[in-house]
Length: 356
Image (tube, rainbow, N blue to C red):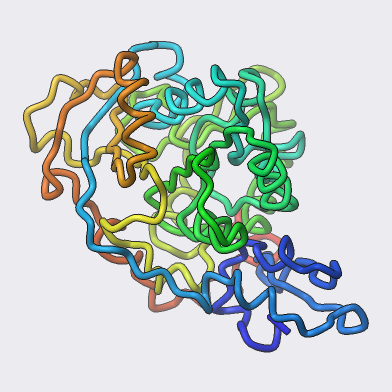
């Protein structure tokens, strides 16, 4: 049913409908550009409508006009800070959950650098979840598994894009006090196919890849530095080839079509926490303006406030006013490029990354 109502261009790819289907009639396949979209096996479908009740596109998010507590913050642990994209607040929140015998669900690479969400209760796996990943993550069965944990009274932290957080909440359909959610301030989600093709280009040119670090701090926090670590030990950081991907990402060419009409681009957020980079820190008084990384943190609910009051001892915190932290995707979605469709078709050609 869902594939007849929500078009490929409108689908968020959150996979809530897949998790909700009681007959396992929904699977997710890749469209021409590599974006995950639902496909329904109508021999199994019973027209129950569950897929429609959990869809964030159909059940559009309308932010409640409650002003959050906003601050800039950074963890005190230098190693954790260096391994984090901005100020390391994910590490601090997830430490709190893990210490309390809970579980963390966030995006992680597999061995082939496919990005997917996974659930863990170990620090080693959590550490691998740190850092930005500029490609859409696959949710898989995570919503189902989170519900089972919550029903069994386990504490769970879910971190994802706002539409993924919304998909989880619609799927759960009720509030759980043992659930913490954190949405990221999102620029838009790139296609896994584009990312895979880009990595293949790098592998063919430079050799096997050991690690991928978006927003690497090798040269400091400021700047969109993509670092590719090769198996031979060589590091490619912000060179002419790695810049190809980050340039296209910044200009919006790699994203899902729905990202250009994102209704989560507001200060009235969907998650308990909202986390992002504190761009504009140079315009305010701050001891954290040293190019090591600083997060902007929105504390949107009492649940988040309770957690933050506990972890605050591990942070350097500076209270902010909302005008201090407003950045593009907290005000409006990323603008769709005029030649978006043309460039996406070019990205499918065999030698695009080599020739551009």
